[in-house]
Picture 1 (cartoon, rainbow, N blue to C red):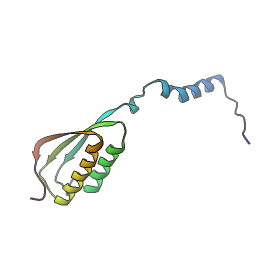
Picture 2 (cartoon, one colour):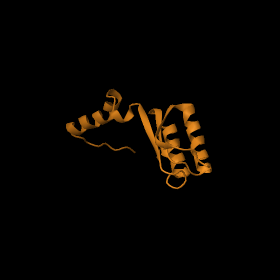
Picture 3 (cartoon, rainbow, N blue to C red):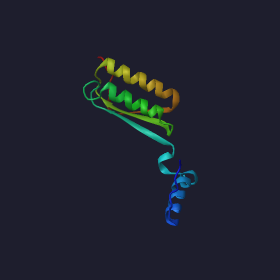
Picture 4 (cartoon, rainbow, N blue to C red):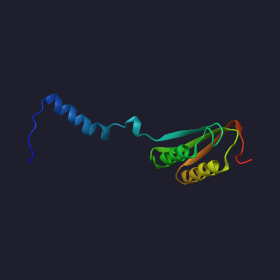
Length: 111
């Protein structure tokens, strides 16, 4: 059985604003975004595959992300970790645009 809750006029106005306002006003946290993914450090030692792949997957699944800027500053490192990150970025590029940026270093891994 339902029960009635008595609300003051102020509480009714606040409740109606909470329910209706997000539909009327374009809230900043729902606007489209361009994400920046920074890959800094040695691949495998400082850049871990699981963490990076999880982050890339989250970017892929976030409908607000329109594009991803991949900012790489790495001397290289593990080939298997680099391959896992590369595959995750390939899956991401199917859904969103991707830009690349290298800082001072952008060496290949597995050398």
